[in-house]
Image (tube, rainbow over all chains, first blue to last red; front, top):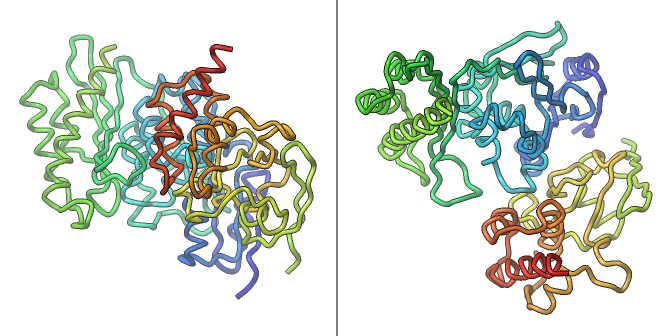
Length: 288
Length: 158
């Protein structure tokens, strides 16, 4: 076994070259809250770790014409303390804030949560609902990919060798738009989602839903963007009938596993319930 | 493979050390620098016994690589008392017997100090949530939570 190397590049190009040039397995280090656990457990044995936190774009948050660019390695605690960002995208920030303890919040990042590719990652359905797009850099330049196309299955992503997420871009929010994320866990804190639901919707001046995105976490091999659930809301005032259709569409999209934290039946039913509840919060936010 | 040479600041003092890439910051603190106040409980970020401050952020030092400490500023439990004078949280933990075996105590103290610096007058709920990443298997938390609230109340009254 070759010795593990650590590099801390200061530019995107340098990081891409290091990752692409590695002869063995190379891993990106953001907050390390998953990576170091996997290293310790010998689940992975990379020859190179590339710490991306010394690249300015990876740790900063900027806004231009209402479009937020969030560094993929920016710590969740910093995002939570960014009052403007929190006010603009409370669903995304609250979702990320649910990940782990205060200590974990000091290091964990949106990019890490996404690229660790857990089907139960809390921030991912919230980002998908918010139409977040990843800017991905690699040896051949950069490309933009919707968040829903990054994870392909548990621990698997669509990123090619040498590629890594630089920023996560949240679009300019239309007027009367609200987002929300809810998850079910059997306790109040410090647990992994049994089901997670992200909702983002836009209302017209009359209160009719003109656009919606609904994403489910922990009920399939990766977070799902559920078009039928969004369609149940679009064109309605999100009344009881629309909510019932939303609930049914969310349940229909589920293909969860059975495990000690939730049966297939339970996860499926809860997905419908949480879709309604998250929609109610998103509605309230869109109206205010 | 040569070891990594790291220059950092610990409890206000410049420190240099050599470490293997695999060593965590906790490994370095305990095994290379003999700062054994930070404890290893789970080594997976669940228990908080290894809590330290890195650049004013509360983190688990078991989830930070030693090499990452380059250029950063670290605060550990060893820097909490002012010479012979205990920090008010340390004093209150003693008075209230908010510890038994003591393994979790340094982490709780570091975490509680960071809370009070950010939020000097927290509610009980805020204290409980802030400290949710610090596990104690002896005392059952109430004395710990009460100690933090009492220190906050006394600082407010002072």
